Image (tube, rainbow, N blue to C red):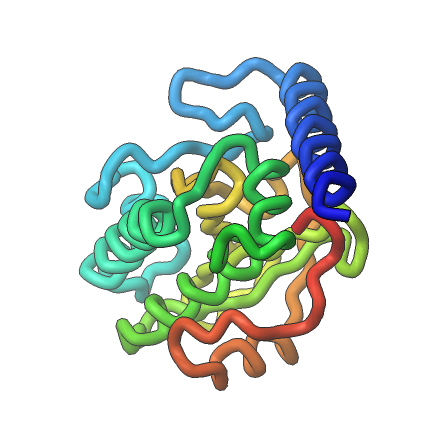
Length: 209
């Protein structure tokens, strides 16, 4: 029984790696600062001026200081969770480790939930936060946090994704993400905010996510 289970774990790991490698080959070439995922970009530091400026430009009333704090929080959260959860590459392998109990956290909704709590703790006054999901309840489901100016429509926001590159923050406009089709889920946003910090419980995630 144990040998059989181990054999299937090995098969699962190999499948995840091969699937992800094949997926990456199909991605377009990355720009100088791009992630290779449409018009998304890697954050280069906790004080990334490009990201700070883009958040600040969401609206005339957005406070530059809040844009700076969101940038720092999103960047540091990914780095810290990578260490805390022992995140490995590629994401398919990490998902397998989480789903088999070898890691405490590291699925996309884990990253998004933790980031939501940390951003909410900033008590932002000129920015709103949103829970975004794509391909919900499928094997391709993904969750991220989106930031907009206060009262601004969700579709005009900037996504913050710490999962896709194993703790390395990528960001960009919702319509610039070539891999996903984002929708807002206000009910899930409210439910996630009610969770105590570090509570990773939730609905059973779709396989692999």
